[in-house]
Length: 332
Image (tube, rainbow, N blue to C red):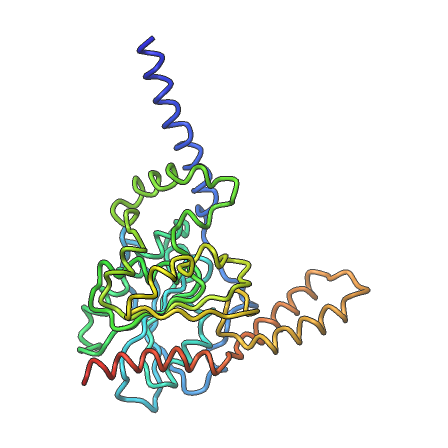
């Protein structure tokens, strides 16, 4: 009887863990290559220059990074590290990078593990995005070319998850902007798998060690960094309820945290939504009577991708003002 009880207990632990491992690797076990027709061309951004800089991440995989600068700015205010997360390479954020550089900053951006130019057989999951950012920050701090300038972070989606995750490891980050991120890696799992959260956390711990033990609520409460959190209530990718905003009543008492809520801006609050919605209405009208061919679909995807170079200047300036505020405070 005791033997059967032990066997039953072992099966109840290891079978769900085995299932979770298979699901996890199926979800995150492949590389991500951004289609060429969705890649931004650096040449369309005037006054934006870059130089390559690579670095190793946790398993020795070489990550491809770039330092973005402007030839008109020899004395940048600081360095902004852009975490692109696991869904795409850093190229998707060239519009924001361009705005940051033209606002007086130097930007360090990179492709995460398993993305575009970087090594890695797979993206690895959300915790891998946090690990890659940790190593990116170390690279910036070790590089003498960066001097003693303040370091800031910017992350969107899983990149937003990453910029909070690393704050326990780097207490000297001046300011952080987290856009449309989420509280826990398990929040991104499908709803019908939510009962398996304890097993997901155990699997992540076995795979990533102490990185999986981060309590983001505790991190935000005790970090020395100033953090700006942006989210739209209609976000269909990262639900508003899964983000840090569900803890806003608890966290709003902390002066180093700033919450900014938006309406009708979807997953990316920095884009010019009026232009995108106008284009979408036109495309829907044009194609109402037609079946979209793959070629036509790619063409319209390109149109929408080009439209996304058009940022909402008011929102981007709020981000820059936030960085500026805490940089200037350091020098007072």
